[in-house]
Length: 368
Image (cartoon, rainbow, N blue to C red):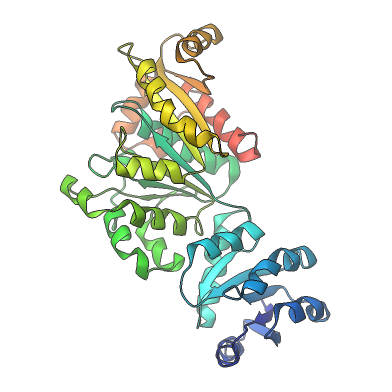
Protein backbone atom coordinates (compact mmCIF):
# COMPACT_ATOMS: atom_id res chain seq x y z
CA UNK A 1 0.00 0.00 0.00
CA UNK A 2 1.20 3.50 -0.85
CA UNK A 3 0.83 6.05 1.93
CA UNK A 4 0.17 9.56 0.68
CA UNK A 5 1.39 11.33 3.80
CA UNK A 6 1.02 14.69 5.50
CA UNK A 7 3.63 15.35 8.19
CA UNK A 8 3.08 17.92 10.96
CA UNK A 9 6.04 18.80 13.20
CA UNK A 10 6.52 22.13 14.98
CA UNK A 11 10.33 22.00 15.26
CA UNK A 12 12.19 22.75 12.01
CA UNK A 13 15.20 20.49 12.30
CA UNK A 14 13.06 17.56 13.46
CA UNK A 15 10.65 18.18 10.57
CA UNK A 16 13.54 17.97 8.11
CA UNK A 17 14.85 14.75 9.69
CA UNK A 18 11.46 13.03 9.72
CA UNK A 19 10.67 14.12 6.16
CA UNK A 20 13.97 12.65 5.02
CA UNK A 21 13.16 9.31 6.65
CA UNK A 22 9.82 9.12 4.82
CA UNK A 23 11.24 10.20 1.46
CA UNK A 24 13.86 7.44 1.65
CA UNK A 25 11.14 4.75 1.55
CA UNK A 26 9.07 4.27 -1.60
CA UNK A 27 6.10 3.13 0.50
CA UNK A 28 5.53 6.76 1.45
CA UNK A 29 4.60 9.61 -0.84
CA UNK A 30 5.23 12.69 1.28
CA UNK A 31 2.55 15.04 -0.01
CA UNK A 32 3.20 17.99 2.28
CA UNK A 33 4.83 19.10 5.54
CA UNK A 34 3.64 21.68 8.04
CA UNK A 35 4.90 23.35 11.19
CA UNK A 36 1.37 24.26 12.25
CA UNK A 37 -1.53 21.89 12.81
CA UNK A 38 -4.05 24.59 11.92
CA UNK A 39 -2.39 25.14 8.53
CA UNK A 40 -2.33 21.40 7.88
CA UNK A 41 -6.01 21.11 8.72
CA UNK A 42 -6.92 23.95 6.36
CA UNK A 43 -4.72 23.01 3.40
CA UNK A 44 -4.29 19.22 3.32
CA UNK A 45 -7.50 18.25 1.53
CA UNK A 46 -6.04 19.14 -1.86
CA UNK A 47 -3.42 16.38 -1.47
CA UNK A 48 -5.96 13.57 -0.77
CA UNK A 49 -3.80 12.12 2.04
CA UNK A 50 -4.46 8.69 3.54
CA UNK A 51 -1.92 9.05 6.37
CA UNK A 52 -1.28 11.88 8.80
CA UNK A 53 1.72 11.88 11.13
CA UNK A 54 1.17 14.62 13.70
CA UNK A 55 3.37 15.99 16.48
CA UNK A 56 1.27 15.50 19.63
CA UNK A 57 3.94 17.04 21.85
CA UNK A 58 2.38 20.23 20.52
CA UNK A 59 -0.74 21.00 22.55
CA UNK A 60 -2.53 22.67 19.64
CA UNK A 61 -2.00 19.66 17.40
CA UNK A 62 -3.17 17.27 20.12
CA UNK A 63 -6.35 19.26 20.73
CA UNK A 64 -7.08 19.42 16.97
CA UNK A 65 -6.85 15.66 16.35
CA UNK A 66 -10.64 15.15 16.51
CA UNK A 67 -11.04 17.86 13.86
CA UNK A 68 -8.55 16.14 11.57
CA UNK A 69 -10.25 12.78 12.01
CA UNK A 70 -13.67 14.28 11.34
CA UNK A 71 -12.46 16.01 8.16
CA UNK A 72 -10.46 13.01 6.87
CA UNK A 73 -12.46 9.95 8.02
CA UNK A 74 -10.74 7.54 5.61
CA UNK A 75 -7.18 8.46 6.59
CA UNK A 76 -4.99 6.84 9.22
CA UNK A 77 -3.48 8.99 11.98
CA UNK A 78 -0.35 8.53 14.06
CA UNK A 79 0.89 10.85 16.79
CA UNK A 80 4.58 11.48 17.40
CA UNK A 81 6.32 12.32 20.68
CA UNK A 82 9.92 12.63 21.79
CA UNK A 83 9.40 10.56 24.97
CA UNK A 84 6.54 8.23 25.82
CA UNK A 85 3.75 10.00 27.69
CA UNK A 86 0.93 7.63 28.57
CA UNK A 87 -1.65 10.36 29.08
CA UNK A 88 -1.04 11.82 25.61
CA UNK A 89 -0.98 8.39 23.98
CA UNK A 90 -4.36 7.63 25.55
CA UNK A 91 -5.79 10.95 24.33
CA UNK A 92 -4.59 10.15 20.82
CA UNK A 93 -6.45 6.81 20.86
CA UNK A 94 -9.54 8.39 22.43
CA UNK A 95 -9.56 10.89 19.55
CA UNK A 96 -9.82 8.04 17.05
CA UNK A 97 -6.21 7.87 15.86
CA UNK A 98 -4.23 4.63 15.64
CA UNK A 99 -1.64 5.43 18.31
CA UNK A 100 1.78 6.99 18.78
CA UNK A 101 5.41 6.51 17.75
CA UNK A 102 8.56 8.09 19.12
CA UNK A 103 10.58 10.58 17.11
CA UNK A 104 12.94 10.59 15.39
CA UNK A 105 11.55 7.55 13.59
CA UNK A 106 12.52 5.44 10.62
CA UNK A 107 10.10 4.54 7.86
CA UNK A 108 9.94 0.95 9.11
CA UNK A 109 8.91 2.23 12.55
CA UNK A 110 5.85 3.84 10.97
CA UNK A 111 4.97 0.65 9.08
CA UNK A 112 5.37 -1.45 12.24
CA UNK A 113 3.18 0.96 14.21
CA UNK A 114 0.45 0.81 11.57
CA UNK A 115 0.59 -3.01 11.67
CA UNK A 116 0.38 -3.21 15.46
CA UNK A 117 -2.29 -0.60 15.92
CA UNK A 118 -4.45 -1.87 13.07
CA UNK A 119 -4.34 -5.37 14.58
CA UNK A 120 -5.52 -3.89 17.89
CA UNK A 121 -9.03 -3.38 16.56
CA UNK A 122 -11.41 -0.45 16.43
CA UNK A 123 -10.10 3.07 16.93
CA UNK A 124 -11.73 3.28 20.32
CA UNK A 125 -10.46 3.56 23.90
CA UNK A 126 -9.13 0.44 25.60
CA UNK A 127 -11.38 -1.52 27.95
CA UNK A 128 -9.28 -2.43 30.99
CA UNK A 129 -10.98 -5.10 33.08
CA UNK A 130 -9.75 -6.22 36.51
CA UNK A 131 -10.85 -9.61 37.88
CA UNK A 132 -10.96 -9.61 41.68
CA UNK A 133 -11.94 -12.17 44.29
CA UNK A 134 -12.04 -11.72 48.08
CA UNK A 135 -10.45 -15.12 48.67
CA UNK A 136 -8.68 -17.82 46.66
CA UNK A 137 -10.24 -20.77 44.83
CA UNK A 138 -12.97 -18.51 43.47
CA UNK A 139 -12.75 -19.32 39.76
CA UNK A 140 -11.33 -15.87 39.03
CA UNK A 141 -8.64 -17.03 36.57
CA UNK A 142 -11.10 -19.35 34.85
CA UNK A 143 -13.54 -16.49 34.40
CA UNK A 144 -10.84 -14.11 33.09
CA UNK A 145 -9.56 -16.74 30.63
CA UNK A 146 -12.99 -17.68 29.27
CA UNK A 147 -13.90 -13.99 29.07
CA UNK A 148 -10.76 -13.33 26.99
CA UNK A 149 -11.72 -16.09 24.55
CA UNK A 150 -15.27 -14.85 24.22
CA UNK A 151 -14.28 -11.18 23.85
CA UNK A 152 -11.89 -12.10 21.05
CA UNK A 153 -14.59 -14.15 19.32
CA UNK A 154 -17.33 -11.55 19.66
CA UNK A 155 -15.22 -8.51 18.75
CA UNK A 156 -12.56 -9.82 16.37
CA UNK A 157 -10.17 -7.49 18.21
CA UNK A 158 -6.93 -8.07 20.11
CA UNK A 159 -7.29 -9.21 23.73
CA UNK A 160 -4.53 -9.47 26.34
CA UNK A 161 -4.46 -11.10 29.77
CA UNK A 162 -1.86 -9.86 32.25
CA UNK A 163 -1.25 -12.30 35.09
CA UNK A 164 -0.99 -9.93 38.05
CA UNK A 165 -1.37 -12.71 40.63
CA UNK A 166 2.33 -12.32 41.26
CA UNK A 167 2.85 -15.23 43.64
CA UNK A 168 0.49 -17.93 42.41
CA UNK A 169 -0.63 -16.92 38.92
CA UNK A 170 -1.40 -19.76 36.53
CA UNK A 171 -2.80 -18.10 33.41
CA UNK A 172 0.03 -19.66 31.38
CA UNK A 173 -1.01 -23.14 32.51
CA UNK A 174 -4.58 -22.57 31.39
CA UNK A 175 -3.36 -21.82 27.88
CA UNK A 176 -0.57 -24.43 27.85
CA UNK A 177 1.93 -21.66 27.15
CA UNK A 178 5.54 -21.10 28.14
CA UNK A 179 6.05 -17.33 27.86
CA UNK A 180 9.55 -16.13 27.09
CA UNK A 181 9.02 -13.04 29.27
CA UNK A 182 6.87 -12.22 32.26
CA UNK A 183 5.26 -9.40 34.17
CA UNK A 184 8.31 -8.86 36.39
CA UNK A 185 10.53 -8.18 33.37
CA UNK A 186 7.96 -5.93 31.73
CA UNK A 187 7.51 -3.90 34.93
CA UNK A 188 11.26 -3.55 35.35
CA UNK A 189 11.80 -2.45 31.73
CA UNK A 190 8.69 -0.37 31.12
CA UNK A 191 10.35 3.05 31.38
CA UNK A 192 12.59 2.09 28.46
CA UNK A 193 9.88 0.61 26.23
CA UNK A 194 7.53 1.69 23.47
CA UNK A 195 4.43 -0.31 22.45
CA UNK A 196 6.40 -2.02 19.66
CA UNK A 197 9.11 -2.98 22.16
CA UNK A 198 6.50 -4.14 24.70
CA UNK A 199 4.76 -6.51 22.27
CA UNK A 200 7.34 -9.36 22.64
CA UNK A 201 6.63 -9.48 26.38
CA UNK A 202 3.23 -10.94 25.45
CA UNK A 203 2.88 -14.53 24.27
CA UNK A 204 0.35 -15.09 21.47
CA UNK A 205 -1.82 -18.12 22.19
CA UNK A 206 -4.00 -17.91 19.08
CA UNK A 207 -7.40 -16.57 18.05
CA UNK A 208 -6.56 -12.96 18.87
CA UNK A 209 -5.39 -13.57 22.45
CA UNK A 210 -2.04 -12.72 24.04
CA UNK A 211 -0.91 -13.41 27.59
CA UNK A 212 1.73 -11.91 29.85
CA UNK A 213 2.71 -14.61 32.34
CA UNK A 214 3.35 -14.17 36.03
CA UNK A 215 6.73 -14.53 37.79
CA UNK A 216 8.53 -17.85 37.56
CA UNK A 217 9.17 -17.78 41.33
CA UNK A 218 6.81 -16.45 44.06
CA UNK A 219 9.51 -14.36 45.75
CA UNK A 220 9.90 -12.34 42.54
CA UNK A 221 6.55 -10.71 43.35
CA UNK A 222 8.43 -8.34 45.65
CA UNK A 223 10.24 -6.92 42.61
CA UNK A 224 7.07 -5.45 41.11
CA UNK A 225 5.76 -2.06 42.19
CA UNK A 226 2.16 -1.10 41.58
CA UNK A 227 2.97 2.08 39.64
CA UNK A 228 5.29 0.15 37.30
CA UNK A 229 2.60 -2.41 36.61
CA UNK A 230 0.06 0.30 35.91
CA UNK A 231 2.50 1.75 33.36
CA UNK A 232 2.64 -1.68 31.68
CA UNK A 233 -1.16 -1.84 31.58
CA UNK A 234 -1.43 1.67 30.14
CA UNK A 235 1.04 0.96 27.36
CA UNK A 236 -0.63 -2.38 26.64
CA UNK A 237 -3.74 -0.38 25.82
CA UNK A 238 -1.98 0.84 22.67
CA UNK A 239 -1.59 -2.78 21.52
CA UNK A 240 -4.82 -4.40 22.65
CA UNK A 241 -8.45 -3.31 22.55
CA UNK A 242 -9.19 -5.29 25.72
CA UNK A 243 -6.69 -5.68 28.57
CA UNK A 244 -7.75 -8.18 31.25
CA UNK A 245 -6.01 -8.19 34.64
CA UNK A 246 -6.04 -11.37 36.72
CA UNK A 247 -5.50 -9.93 40.22
CA UNK A 248 -4.27 -11.62 43.37
CA UNK A 249 -6.96 -12.59 45.87
CA UNK A 250 -7.89 -10.15 48.60
CA UNK A 251 -6.85 -6.57 49.13
CA UNK A 252 -3.14 -5.77 48.80
CA UNK A 253 -1.23 -2.91 47.14
CA UNK A 254 -1.26 -4.57 43.70
CA UNK A 255 -4.91 -5.63 43.65
CA UNK A 256 -6.07 -2.29 45.03
CA UNK A 257 -4.02 -0.20 42.59
CA UNK A 258 -5.03 -2.18 39.50
CA UNK A 259 -8.69 -2.47 40.49
CA UNK A 260 -8.83 1.29 41.02
CA UNK A 261 -7.08 1.95 37.69
CA UNK A 262 -9.29 -0.35 35.59
CA UNK A 263 -12.47 1.03 34.04
CA UNK A 264 -14.28 -2.25 34.75
CA UNK A 265 -14.03 -4.41 37.87
CA UNK A 266 -15.45 -7.93 37.77
CA UNK A 267 -15.80 -9.43 41.24
CA UNK A 268 -16.23 -13.17 41.51
CA UNK A 269 -16.68 -15.56 44.39
CA UNK A 270 -17.38 -19.29 44.50
CA UNK A 271 -20.49 -20.46 46.31
CA UNK A 272 -19.33 -23.35 48.52
CA UNK A 273 -19.10 -22.75 52.27
CA UNK A 274 -21.92 -20.25 52.63
CA UNK A 275 -19.59 -17.41 53.69
CA UNK A 276 -18.79 -16.12 50.19
CA UNK A 277 -21.74 -13.75 49.96
CA UNK A 278 -20.66 -12.16 53.23
CA UNK A 279 -17.09 -11.79 51.97
CA UNK A 280 -18.31 -10.22 48.73
CA UNK A 281 -20.57 -7.89 50.65
CA UNK A 282 -17.61 -6.64 52.69
CA UNK A 283 -15.50 -6.23 49.53
CA UNK A 284 -18.20 -4.17 47.86
CA UNK A 285 -17.77 -1.42 50.45
CA UNK A 286 -14.40 -0.64 48.85
CA UNK A 287 -15.63 -0.90 45.26
CA UNK A 288 -18.75 1.12 45.94
CA UNK A 289 -16.63 4.23 46.54
CA UNK A 290 -15.22 3.90 43.00
CA UNK A 291 -18.63 3.19 41.49
CA UNK A 292 -19.57 6.81 42.10
CA UNK A 293 -17.31 8.17 39.36
CA UNK A 294 -18.31 5.99 36.44
CA UNK A 295 -16.44 2.74 36.98
CA UNK A 296 -18.34 -0.35 35.88
CA UNK A 297 -18.57 -2.93 38.69
CA UNK A 298 -20.00 -6.37 38.02
CA UNK A 299 -20.37 -8.90 40.87
CA UNK A 300 -20.67 -12.56 39.85
CA UNK A 301 -21.03 -15.78 41.82
CA UNK A 302 -19.65 -19.05 40.47
CA UNK A 303 -20.18 -22.69 41.40
CA UNK A 304 -23.95 -22.19 41.77
CA UNK A 305 -25.61 -25.60 41.68
CA UNK A 306 -29.13 -24.38 41.05
CA UNK A 307 -28.68 -21.72 38.37
CA UNK A 308 -32.19 -20.29 38.14
CA UNK A 309 -33.66 -16.81 38.29
CA UNK A 310 -35.13 -17.68 41.67
CA UNK A 311 -31.71 -18.68 43.01
CA UNK A 312 -30.24 -15.46 41.63
CA UNK A 313 -32.94 -13.50 43.42
CA UNK A 314 -32.14 -15.24 46.71
CA UNK A 315 -28.43 -14.45 46.36
CA UNK A 316 -29.25 -10.82 45.57
CA UNK A 317 -31.44 -10.56 48.67
CA UNK A 318 -28.60 -11.78 50.85
CA UNK A 319 -26.02 -9.71 48.96
CA UNK A 320 -28.12 -6.54 49.06
CA UNK A 321 -27.20 -5.59 45.52
CA UNK A 322 -27.84 -6.59 41.92
CA UNK A 323 -25.77 -9.60 40.79
CA UNK A 324 -24.61 -9.40 37.18
CA UNK A 325 -24.46 -13.15 36.54
CA UNK A 326 -24.50 -16.44 38.40
CA UNK A 327 -22.28 -19.12 36.92
CA UNK A 328 -23.10 -22.81 37.23
CA UNK A 329 -20.82 -25.44 38.70
CA UNK A 330 -18.89 -27.07 35.83
CA UNK A 331 -16.58 -29.93 36.73
CA UNK A 332 -15.73 -30.51 33.06
CA UNK A 333 -14.35 -27.00 32.85
CA UNK A 334 -11.93 -27.67 35.71
CA UNK A 335 -10.43 -30.62 33.88
CA UNK A 336 -10.06 -28.56 30.69
CA UNK A 337 -8.32 -25.62 32.38
CA UNK A 338 -6.09 -27.86 34.47
CA UNK A 339 -4.77 -29.65 31.40
CA UNK A 340 -4.12 -26.49 29.39
CA UNK A 341 -6.74 -27.36 26.77
CA UNK A 342 -8.77 -24.18 27.16
CA UNK A 343 -8.15 -22.88 23.63
CA UNK A 344 -8.79 -26.26 21.99
CA UNK A 345 -11.58 -27.88 23.96
CA UNK A 346 -13.78 -25.12 25.37
CA UNK A 347 -17.36 -26.18 24.55
CA UNK A 348 -19.57 -23.26 23.57
CA UNK A 349 -22.71 -25.10 24.63
CA UNK A 350 -21.53 -25.48 28.24
CA UNK A 351 -23.87 -23.35 30.42
CA UNK A 352 -20.92 -21.65 32.15
CA UNK A 353 -19.39 -20.67 28.81
CA UNK A 354 -22.65 -19.46 27.31
CA UNK A 355 -23.27 -17.27 30.35
CA UNK A 356 -19.81 -15.68 30.10
CA UNK A 357 -20.30 -15.32 26.34
CA UNK A 358 -23.50 -13.38 26.98
CA UNK A 359 -21.66 -10.96 29.28
CA UNK A 360 -18.82 -10.63 26.76
CA UNK A 361 -21.31 -9.80 24.01
CA UNK A 362 -22.90 -7.11 26.17
CA UNK A 363 -19.46 -5.57 26.72
CA UNK A 364 -18.56 -5.65 23.02
CA UNK A 365 -21.78 -4.04 21.85
CA UNK A 366 -21.62 -1.42 24.60
CA UNK A 367 -24.50 -2.52 26.80
CA UNK A 368 -22.07 -2.90 29.72
